[in-house]
Structures are given as structure tokens and as C-alpha cells.
Amino acid sequence: MPTPTARPGAADILTLGFGTAALMWTVGYACRLFGPAVPAPLMFALLLAGLLAGGFAAGRYTTRGVRGGIYAGLLAGTIDLLMIASLIGGQTPHEIKHGALLWIPGTLLVSVALAALGAALARPRRDLLTDPPDWPGLFAAIAPCATVVLLAAGGLVTGFDEGLAVVDWPNTEGYNMFLYPLARMTGGVYLEHAHRLLGSLVGLTTLALALHTQFTDRRRWLKALAWLALALVIVQGILGGLRVTGRFTLSTRPADTDPKILLAIVHGVFGQIVFAVLVVVAICRSRRFIAVTPQAATASVGTDRAFGWALLVILIAQLVLGALVRHFSWALDILRYGLPVDPAKLIAIGRWALTLHTTIAVLVVLLAVAVGIRAWGLYRHVPVLRRLGSTLLFLAGLQLIFGVVALIVSANNSVLRRPTAPDVAITTAHQVIGAALLACTVMLLVWNYRLLAPPPLAPTAPHPR
Image (cartoon, rainbow, N blue to C red; front, top):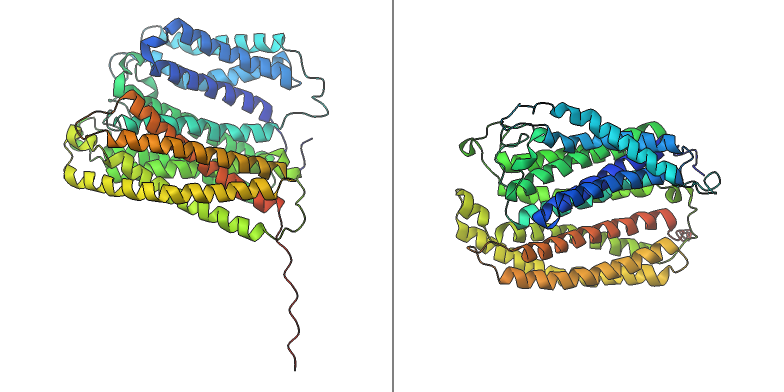
């Protein structure tokens, strides 16, 4: 049952509403990504199925029944309006299609009806009163999950060198970002614009998480951490915008902007750090974290923490080098947009970063294996540490495989050759697995400090007189 430290509040509805919306946005993004390969009716059916699933979860895992489905559907539909708004905008900025405003009540009605139907079809679990789901923890987990999708979308933007496909920010080609017509979202513009929309979803989710933590959790340090996470998300969004424009301007003329490759690198690395902070918030909001009793003093805890911190630091260094490699190896931004930088220098920087990135990767894998084996082997009596240790070992092996393949792909590309879809898929997967490694390392450290205690200091002998 929830402890006095963290009250559930409306966490069940927030979880189901935001979770359903995040699922629908992810499905819609993926379907549009594959273009004609996914017919529009199939995409529409999958989106409706997401609403049914959210309502079914409300009927199955809450005591609210159909009423819970209605609430969850209304919240999901409200969030989905940010995506549906692309069907409202006309062919010129600030124009609204005739009759398009009916999409707003229509979206809400369909969302409520389908979610209510899903809840009506579900049979509630019998143990809901004695063992309810950890709704505060589940809600906190949505923000990092949505951030993983955002990181992957950003990886595709970088991989295809489409970071400057849209020249203005926060508008899109003069349109309000949410009213940019769906028909115009093609090619690189779709990749960049969809990345911005997904960023708005992460921002909205983090805002709701910070507010919910503020009003339902009594731990001041966790409230501060949740608000810090929100501030970091906002900063990350600003960094992404200034990467495109170089200054605060609403102009749609490339001559009025000054794109910053350095900010692109900072944006990419900072995004993974934000992801790690959101992971920490999610862990600390979980019921298990609140209710767990620390284990007895363990002699090896100091060594494990030292190894964990070393792995965390070197992973962040690898993120920086990886960002340098991705942004400088092909230097397509330079050739395509005529930025005032010598491409030869950028290529040289990219090759230097690639060499260093590859060398340090060996150290990362060795250190990750050491940390994983220690967590898996020394703490078999602590299930969460044992599982995280085995997960870290798996991710380290997977990252090594994708790293080698990405290295081959990078070596086969030249400045004048545009990267192919398989190339970008491999390098983006390599980036996302790196984020998972970072998250797993952070989780190991957090749980180490929560579950384990260092041995007491030995009493010092009195100084002889």
C-alpha cells in the first residue's frame, strides 16, 4: 500500500492518460516514419487501439471502472490535441481550415468513448484493494520512457543531417509549431518537426510530474529534484532551438540565423544527462524505493560505488566523443548549408574523435563488465542489484556489437555520400543503447546507496601518553 511519504493522488489517471498519449504519439511517429509502407487506415486503427488499451487498463487495474476510462481518455485526448492540431492549420501561417475546429471536440469525444469502452470490457483484478499498482512510480516512469523515444528521434535527425531542415524556431516555417500542416511534414522537415513535437510531449509530461510530486510527496529533496528535471528539460529545448537559429529570432530567412554545431553537440549530450535525471526521479518515486529496508553493512560497497562513479564519468565522456563523431564525420551540414567553417578541419576533428571514441570504448566495456559482474555476483541476495548487474552485462555486449558495426558504417561513408537508412538505423541504435547503459549505471548507483551500507569505521586506538 502507498506509504505516507508518497500519496497516490490522481496518479492512476495521470499514468493512464499520459501513458496512452505517449504510446499513441510513438505509434504515429513510427508509422509516418515508414511513409507509404504503413497505410493511413492502419495507422488510424493502431491509434484507436491505443485508446482502447488505455481504457482497458483503467478498468483492469483501477477501482474507478468506466469512470476511470472516461477520465483517462479525456486526458489522453487533451494531450493528443497537440498532435491533432496539425490537421487544423491551413496552407498559410495563422490560417485555420474551414470547419477544422470540429476536430477538437471530435477528438475528445472519440477518446472518451473508446477509453470508456475499453474500461467496460475489462474485468477488475481481485487484489486491487490489497495490492494496488504503484501508480506514483509508474507515472514517474513515463517521462524517461518518452525521453527514450525523443532521443531516438533526435538520433535520426542527426544521422540524416536534417538538424537544419527547418530554419526557424520555435515556429516551423513561420507556422505555430503545433499548427504546422501535416501535408508539409515530409522528408527532413518531418524528422526535425516531429522531434520538436516529441520534445513538447516530454516537457508536458515532466511538468505534470513535477506538479504531482510537489503536491503528493513529502520529501523536499525529491520535490527539488523533480523541478530541477523540468528546468533541465526546458534548457534542453532552448539549446535545441538555438542550435538551429543561433540567436533568439522568429525570422524564417536563413540569412538571419547563425546555426551552431557546438550547440548541436551540447544538445545531444545534455539530452542524455536529462534522461538520467528523469530515471533517478522515477526510481525515487517508486514504492519499492520508499518501503525498502537497507541491507546490513557490506565490506565491498565502497569499491562498488567507486567503480560505478568511474563508469558514469567515462560514459559521459564517451557521449561527448560520440557526439563529435556523429556531427563531424560526414560534415554534411557544412556542404549543404554553406556554413563559414573549413570542412577539412571538421573532418579532421571527426577522425580524431572517432579514434579516441573507439579507444575509450574498450575501457567502457571492460569497466561495465566489471561493475556488472560485481553487482550480479556479489549481491545475489539483493534481486534489484542482481538484475541490474545482468542487464548491464547484456547492454555492454550489445553496445560492443553495435559499436563495431557503426565503426564499419562510418568508415564506409564519405563527405559527399549521404548516409543511408540502414546506416542511420545502426548509428541511432548505438546511441540509444549508450543511453540505456547510462541509465542502468545510474540505477545501479542509486540502488547501491539505497540498499547497501558501508561497514562502520573501526574505532581508533587511544594515543598513548
